[in-house]
Length: 176
Image 1: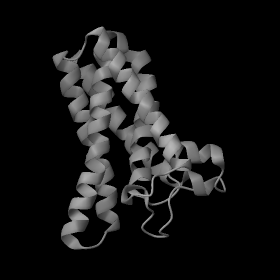
Image 2: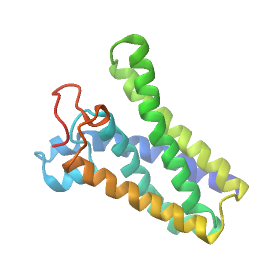
Image 3: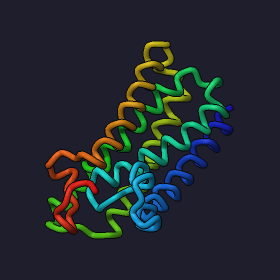
Image 4: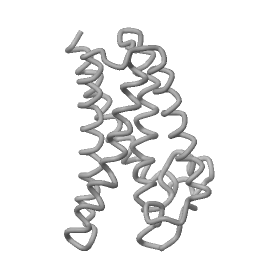
């Protein structure tokens, strides 16, 4: 069972890495369509890069939930924890290294995305295996957190706060 879970988590990491990369370009590839804006990055802000990770993980989570979710009664809570961890790593790592260097480097930004995805799936694997966070209220809380994040990512694409996390460093604009 552990090998099967490891395979699912590895596939998840590879899927999120590939899908997140493709979602980075989807908005422009579709002529900046509004439906694409809901799920893809609309600018180069840190928030929109976090959205790439979230959307890719959410898509994979639906598939994984139906495939192995019954085997792991802690799936939703664990996925919420691992997703939040991956999401938090993006701004932490980005603002730390840019604070030290004084500027942004493209390869480092890409690496941060992959490191965040890898960390999320490694944590996911560890927590699913241990069986923690399996009570019904924790599953409900996990589901609410994931739905809340989905709402926030869509809302803030169209109505972003005027804070640095949402500011496109290339254009100085917020959201669409």
